[in-house]
Length: 76
Image (cartoon, rainbow, N blue to C red; front, side, top):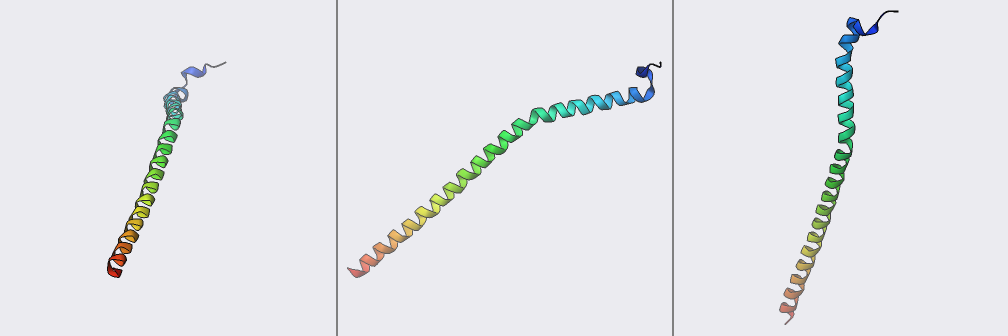
């Protein structure tokens, strides 16, 4: 039986395997953090959309109120 640990191919592949394993571990560790950041960005975007909708609604209400006042002033 030959010893597989001393072959040049095995020695050359070991660093690559270690780097690949470390990369896989790192990516698996980062995945929950990235998902959390994405969910926070989605919540932030939703809040901004609601704020914009409320702003438009209040702007329309203000314009309608101003038009009603001017109509009342003309009638008087």
